Length: 548
Image (cartoon, rainbow, N blue to C red; front, side):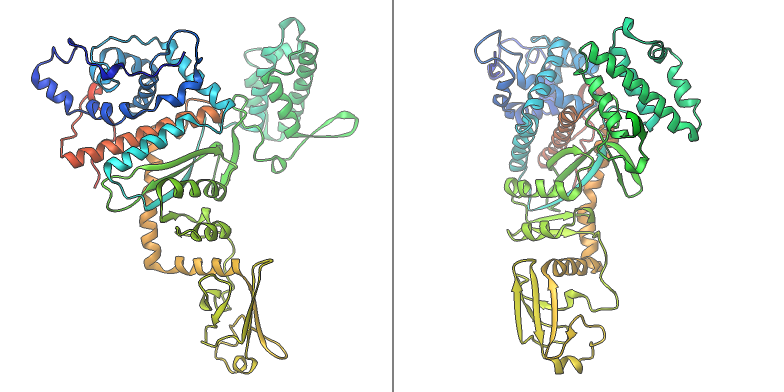
């Protein structure tokens, strides 16, 4: 049964703190634990977790704000579960941070922590539209921004690849993993001699390491034949709905096509979809190649503040998707939400996010998108850039050509967003830019027909080519790459110890919240001018260095 934890507001007469030397009490009250308790623990909204528990039956739940805080602290300090529990039991700073004033007053069994994680996973799996971890992130971040008086008008965005707890496997290795998972689920007495050999200790080594590259196709056929046999047995035993057999069937369908006489033909690697199975243990992971880098897993998208007036920057938004989701798709989903929540006026992005429709729709409402580069085909260098023509603010009419001549008349066609401008033919004939101009001289008049989309692209490209402006944009956006790097290399977000997109979103969310807490504490330390000195695990927080 769900019950909010308010007990920490009532202080007992005799506590561990009361028995401390007054100097140690002062140190405690000026430490990270006191700041955490006041600005994080007391701001956690437990009500969002009520659906995880029964409304009116059973014993009251273990305090949600304590469990959630331990998850945050785990990622702030990079603890293992064993270290986290040990610190909770015996480290008074941890107890103080989570509202406990007597060391050891509230026992937490490991099973309680794992049960809390399972409840969150089960809930988010069934209710993906109500991400209670992301909601907590938004609530805390909003408070941090207000308390630290941060400027959110300028923000930057970047994406980065992350992996779940899987290995990068080739097709043959993946096939063996899938087959093994299926065969292990079958009753031993139902296995044929061929399938029994799959369970032999040296089967994997024989298939993967003793197969020449030009024999891979033959081995894949053999493995798929064994998979088909396993699926038949699973069907007879009514096990075919189990996940290992669903994955096996998916693997066969993605890796083969039907040949004559119900035979299976192995597909070429280029014919396999990017959303095909990448791991026998994580069916959500997908494949992506971005530039020269390729990986299997997920993609995380981050936005953070970047105003120079801020003493430190906070992440304002995050999302985790299958890595086949493009940067443009994520930007279309997230930027409107960022504008709504933080009133961002300038957002800095790299070229991978460029999309004309996105740029027009966002800038129509007063938010400016600044790109450091652009993808796509460049304009014909032999012609005058479209951006040299003078357009009206709504980009539906032309005021003048590059030579300064005004058109006789202009029409805008809503279907296709086409601008048609008609110029004086005689002026065009004597124009010094005649050979490079995009205007076409016809029998009666000269005409220019151009799409609004081409105008936006040309103007954006011209802004990017301005060295001074580009340097400013690159400088503004560069910091978020450092944030991504810190999350991946220092805080372990590059490869998470969980599998599946739901668990990946949960754990990545914890890491983002933990980083914001660290950054907020750096701001508070700068404001109060208190020394941020931490030694040893007992009272240390990583990466809590005041930033200017």
